[in-house]
Image (cartoon, rainbow, N blue to C red):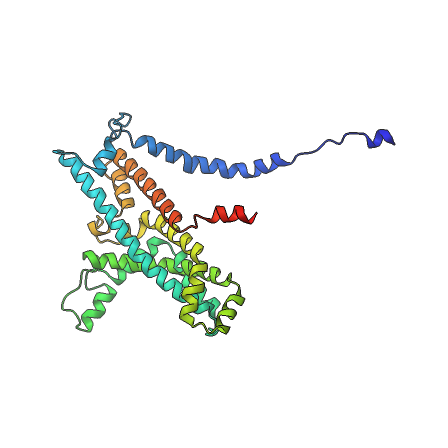
Length: 322
């Protein structure tokens, strides 16, 4: 009996099976994400073109993109093109984000307000989210048919029949009209997703807080700005950062929304600049360097937004609470 109780039991570890199950994800991630990122970083220090792809030029590609070079017409042209596309990217993202966040917030508050008692909210949520799952190519094709520059475009045809205009308006070729159109398309595609995120945050707020505010005589606007908005701050940070990342990588709609074979200069984004330099003119070095600049810019802006929107005294409060 004593021998039986004194026998040592061998522990069986199943941790290795967990590593086996998660290994495929890390292998695929390393192959499709880590390796391309490292390769792009190395390529950014190499010469442009396919004739001498292994010739190292150091920081020359970054210098030409950011600062150009005195007396070098080609380098200055690349610099102007890069900064122009970066400006377009920021304009298109800022415009669509403002429309998107305002519309999403209004709808989220409206759908979550118990006093309004909207019927069929589930149906409306599905309908508003649907544009998010439609492919960008399909959306671009649809809006190209609606806003084509010629008389056969649906909007131009309607305006001509109503005699509101005398000749077709160049919606796609006009600088600000085309930009506003891209902003509206992006807002229409993504506001449903943003609305659901804000709606989930509002539903996560304790109803007793709203009940106490109502008992104290707080108005709807005061409750929204003093209770709902501060509590939703983490959701706003998440939405802003994810929208910023997606906006700086904007490619599909601006690239596809054009007539002919070239993208309009007003709609060329940084992602379009990277794509054209890589696939059209074989400027691999410029394309890789622009990718790394965009990566660093996105990371820096994300950290700045997170830093300015978090409570710096939170760790101290946490230690005191312990």
